[in-house]
View (cartoon, one colour):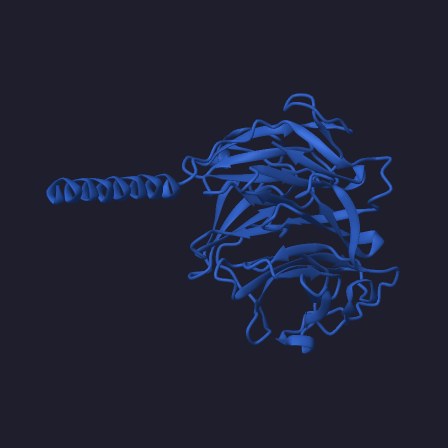
Length: 356
């Protein structure tokens, strides 16, 4: 009887081990990236009172959306995790003085760009002259870098100067922030990428090798290994190695613009502006059409460099499938990896467009 009992016990243990091994193998299986279908819906819209002039969007770990409403000078939150899509003011008020404070007691001088820390505890905001940080738990707003005076001085924290930070992004280790600046003031045209060491708040201006003559920095993204910075640069998508500072063209033409699908430099872009990776970085989504060109979401296959048009191309406002959806502008984008959705800011339609 003891032998039978022992045998049953060992069989049970073996079964449990096999079951656990099977469960772990399922959990460890990586998600297979697939290109989105291109079906478009919206939060907000031309008649909406929720937004004034949205410029960027960031999604947290719960799927809630944070929006930089630039001309309303506020950071807003869209509660999607409970299914309501309710829009509320998270921080900021009518003032544009860039004053630190708690929630609506803080102010922003035209918030332009957003990015989350890797633990989602901090939301970073780029305004016209400063880089700010919002503690998500307390809504406390502090200044990371920038004196508040328009300029190009490198330095530590508030001794540095900025001229219209257009986009901010963190590397995947969460130690370094990259900032694009692209603005014309009188006869002076600023086109540069800055780097902020978040531990020391040291701001430096980066130099690059082999920049194309069409260099026009817009939005950017860093790959998972922190090896390359990818940059939307109007006609082209650039691959910028963060170790060697060498720059190559991933897709598009240095001399020609348009909306033409193709492989690598045979493809054409017309005012490529924003970028977002699919969950496993198999595909790079490109938001095209900020002020001119066909408004569209393009996709780059990162294995083949093949560029295809996912949705858009028609000017206006319409939800629908990939062939019928219309956009007026495509500014900032953010990919919700858990829900497998792409959020894109359609500024002049006062809407957050959802691409599935």
